[in-house]
Every structure is written in C-alpha cells, then in structure tokens.
Length: 396
Ligand code: ADP
Image 1 (spheres, rainbow, N blue to C red):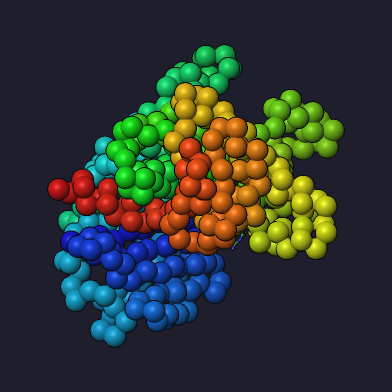
Image 2 (cartoon, rainbow, N blue to C red):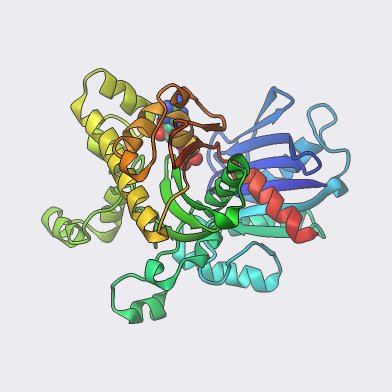
C-alpha cells in the first residue's frame, strides 16, 4: 500500500511517498517559495536529487507539480495515480475536537476551519493543502493527523490554566501541546527498544529542535507537555522565549510602546537561543560560539538544558516515577553537548549518562550507563512515518 504524506506550510509543501509494505520511502521532496519569486521543487529518489525551478503561484499548482514529478517516467516513483491508496496530511491544530487522526469529510473540514482561530499561521495552510489534494486526487481518501491529538489525554489539572474559567469556556484557552506525532512515535520506539509494553512505561520525551517540547508519557498516553496554548512555553527554542512570567508582557509593552503584534514578534522570533546569545537561532552556531569563549552563547546552552532538566524532574513527579528519558529532533538527536548538560545532575533520579555512548549522532541508541536505573535513549523522530502509519491504520 502506497501512502502520500503531505505537510503544507504557508509557502512550502513537504511530501513523502511511502510504501507501507516494509515502510520504505519511495520518494520525497520539498516545494519552496509557493506564491513568491524563485519557487522551486526539490525531489529526491534513490539517492538522486532533482531540482525543478518554475513559477508555482499557489498550493494547487504545487500539488500538481508533485503529482507530475511522482509520475515522471525517469525520476518518478509511480506508474499510475491509482497506486496512491491515501494521503496523510499533517494538521497542526485539532483543538478539543480531535483526539485522534480522522478520515477527512465535509464535517471534518468545517471543524478544521473552526480550529484555525487557534493556529492562524498553520491551519489555513494545512487546509489549502487538503483542498488541493482533494481537487487533484478525487476519490483518494484524505486523512488528517494532528500535532495536538496525542495530548488530548492530558488530565484537566494539567491542561487548564489558572485564569478565570470563563476564558476556557468562551475561547478554548488551555494547554493543547504540539509535536504530538513526534512524541507518540518516539514513545512507541522507546518501548520497542526497551523490550517492554508501552502501557507499563513512564517516559519523558524531549523533542528538542528549532521548536521544542517535553512530554510526560505515562502508559503510552500524554499526561502533560511543555507547549501550551501557543508554541512558546516550556524550554527556550531557536527564537522563542520559553517559560517567562506573564507579568513581563504588559510591562514591556508599556515601556517600549509595543503593539500586540510587535510583542508577539519578540516572544516568538527574537528570543530563545537567538535572543540570549545574540549569535544565532541555530544550536550548532551557538555551540561553536560557546566553544570559542562566547559567554552569552554558553548561557543560552545552559538555559536550554536547565529548563529541559527542570521539566524532566517535574514530569517524573507528575507520573510518580520514570523509566526512560528520550531525546529526539535536531538538537536531541545530534547534540551530545546538550544531552550532557541536560543530564548533569539527574543522577539522583537514577539517570546516568555514559560519556562514550553519548557520542552518537542521529541514530537510535541507549546512552545511559549499564548501572543507570533510568534509561537515556536517543531516538530520531520520524513524523512522516507516523503519519503514514496512522493513515494506513485508519484505512484498514
Ligand atoms: P525543526 O523544528 O525546524 O524541525 P529540527 O528538528 O531540524 O528543527 O532541529 C533544528 C535544530 O537542530 C537546530 O538548532 C540545529 O542547530 C540543531 N542541530 C542539528 N544538527 C545538530 C548537531 N549536529 N549538533 C547540534 N545541533 C544540531
């Protein structure tokens, strides 16, 4: 069975064609600068890379180009469109309506539009991608896989904020959490690596990338997570501030005479690793600057690690125990430096990092000492595979 996975952003579209027999990637690619000058499709198949530069004014044209490329006699991966059994779409926000993936129908589309208010930058782009696929692949089932769905199992005490309750009722203001597909994928893999049923495990999964979140996964379900209503709470990220006292916001707005939009820009785009270091939002640049003696870069690394460690401790308490810590996403998978800084001081919990084993990059590994009671795992995430699996599961 072949599944096409689509992740549509406001000016980009990532795709992956997967053969679910053997879970192999047949082809994948990225359309960039949709609706802008210099639009471009980069397509990868069997180690080779093809670039197509042409005018791509909208997402429908982008999807058509992806289809044409997948059907291409030389660098395609399909003989016939009917080989696509279904399309799995990444959708950022499912609000409280979607606690699992769904086959998309008119009712689902209406609900997705309602959720757009909660994710105004993401859901409208996801919807455009779905509509383009519906138009160009009529009769092929389309499935929505939500970033928020995995966290819908959180108990109310974990997702409600201490604000007047009416704001939850009126506007749905609460913790939703994101990166759910990634947390779910690595939690499942962790159970496989540990050789224990997921239902018995207490895990803290640390998705540390450009955007980051930390999740408490108890018995296979999310019971708390560090991102909330928006995507800025928790540990610091590339350009997002992480946990701050909300009192800072009106104070700064008044002092600097900022509009809500300008304030948002500071919180989402000028803070985090970038704001603290003044160097870059990219962890590799920060690590290099810190190694060269830049104190603010070193501080940025330490704040990222400290906040992550605090969440691990908090979530161990929330779950009443801890079996494993999982590191994933760009930083979690690759940075031995951050993993070292995060784990420093967690020995009291029974988590001991093995310096030698920790030198690993981008592959599954247990990086804890053999005596460590709590296992420390590196597990590369694979959101596309998780989306394809959920899509295939729904079809059967
Ligand atoms: P996104 O959230 O955009 O998917 P990624 O998960 O790809 O982001 O993570 C990007 C982050 O991972 C960047 O900060 C990048 O510097 C970091 N990263 C990637 N490779 C390494 C590495 N070898 N060492 C340290 N950080 C890395």
